[in-house]
Length: 407
Image 1 (cartoon, rainbow, N blue to C red):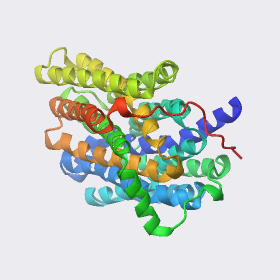
Image 2 (tube, one colour; image 1 turned 180 degrees about the vertical axis):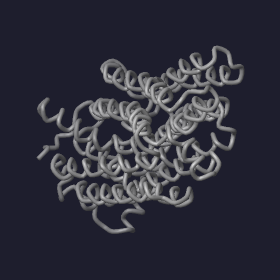
Image 3 (tube, rainbow, N blue to C red; image 1 turned 135 degrees about the vertical axis):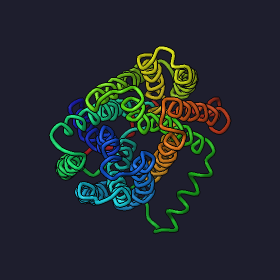
């Protein structure tokens, strides 16, 4: 693959990967406004975030095996169309219950982009090459959370929260054009899975019998839970506890992604010297330590919001190192069923994240609640790596890209 082809692929897949973070994060500055508009509780509104994550998790479990059977393009186009329709309906939702249900459907549609993008990378790359490519794509995934709340807060200058979902529908239309015109089929018929539902069950059974794979997707899911605890709680902590307005929150939230972006791009350089196993272990050790400091700052109030933000940035940086390497190690073990393996990985990530979001609300939506869930997620990820995946027993991943032509 030439540098120009690689750049084009990164841009196309980056657009696909961005749909999930944008769908999740763009409406965050409007959460307090939705609470007031529907005269409901913050915990009830946070369940609309949980609905999106549940949809993303379930959608990937369905779309992953489907894409292994029929190819990548058709499920992507169908899922994007569903996302567009759901976004329009969210803009018209009459109450928080309907909004929550529609967010599940919106998540189902966004799942197509998430799982197909990862599966396409696995179709074309493996091992450290896969980890490097995923790190490049996480630059986009890191930029999307930077832009999403900021875009949302700017939209709220001109419209109400419903306008945010209208904007997501417009983005879905653009994504459809990208999918139709810019993404070739990367899974030729000869490599597609056959056998129907029973074969899909056997595929999932084989994945779940791989102890290292299970451990690695647990690591990825628990690390993602820490990230979603920050996503779910940050608007209430920064706006209600520390008094930031919608625009200030957008800036603060965007600044927090700087550590995540820097870490994912630094991971590319680190992979030239160290194995993904070693980087993952050190990242989780550092992230857990930073999260414990975050808890202490939240409990004592020492240093106020600036100190809290610095600790959060350290946590995000460590998470940015963990997120590319855990999936790379997991998916390198099962290239024969990349879509199914990617689906199970994504389902665990978003499913565990769906549990983390309301947990922050149940614990009170304050800085202490957010910090506690973040610390619990990263500490549990470290434990899963050491006890289940066992980094010393993980086989070295292949260093060269898979020899697959991009037509």
